Image (cartoon, rainbow, N blue to C red; front, side, top):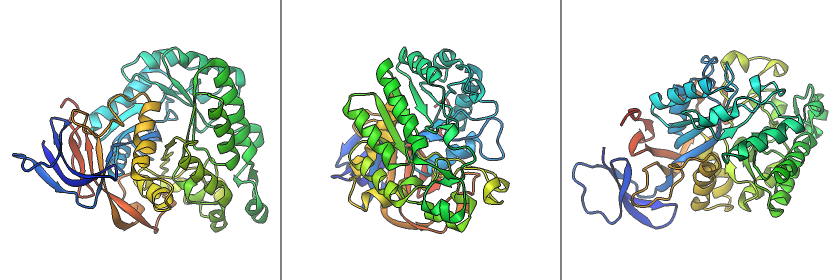
Length: 434
């Protein structure tokens, strides 16, 4: 298919026509005609490189009741994504070459986005023995990111060995920073709200102490460390210090941690139960400032769909996690662009270019230039929409933004030149062998 995008604001800057043909950007400028092309009027819209999520839970294999690679990929496409990193906590765990290849193949056949499996750091996420890291790296999935996400690699010696191992092929360890002994029985952020509600608190130091340890380990080994879903002001300060020291550390923040606070827990609605927990307003503001000054590198959705029975219950029994793929870009616009903290070019950096580099995705997050792969997202920043979980492509209905009016809407998503989304609706997948 050939597409002619007319008068889009490229990265929020100059307006131009963009011609997509044979999976690539064929021409940029003033294009008078393109025979046989589908024309898209993009006046007032912003053209970005396709979004890349470093942190997605697709649940398959094993938890298809919560999500599948197919449904999660559709949700990603609707959210403007052209690539996602699928976390390892499936059933069975993605700790072998066989499982990561299965996930990779499911993504390829689905055809909505690039699905890049994340390999587990330890066998079965058990924290006792390193997984088949080398075999996963050499597999058809070419795994370059490894994480026990949801469970901290709390053993410092094991963490050191993992960092040493991935250094050989420029891989990265993505750490879920949570000291387990400090969070036993924790239900929410430790602070004034937890004291009022009488809930066991989750102290900020449980996150910050692991990050401090791991940046020093990364420095000692000379390897790459990625910190998942940073949630506290103290964590931002530690990462800022580590970067100033020259340590190879990157960090992500979720959309929900950029907007929501622990005040939401007063509703006792389990949709607001998440790991790490929603923090204080001071933490939210520090996270936004950390994104603005480059301390926090990327947005990671931590998209965590659950079946209804896992959330429609009392708080203590509820699963942790929120959906995020279909609302992420709107939350970024609301919290970072409309507040004046970031430009649309900055948004391209934190949602596409940098996450692609972290995950070693050579054909994602590329410049919008002639000859580059046509992985693109067209967003209408003037649009407003009400979040309706029932209308989402994900199986999960656990969106913390349900009923909220959000700015910005994905108008079109192009995955290797194929329109997976048009006029804000799912179009068709890209055939695996085209």
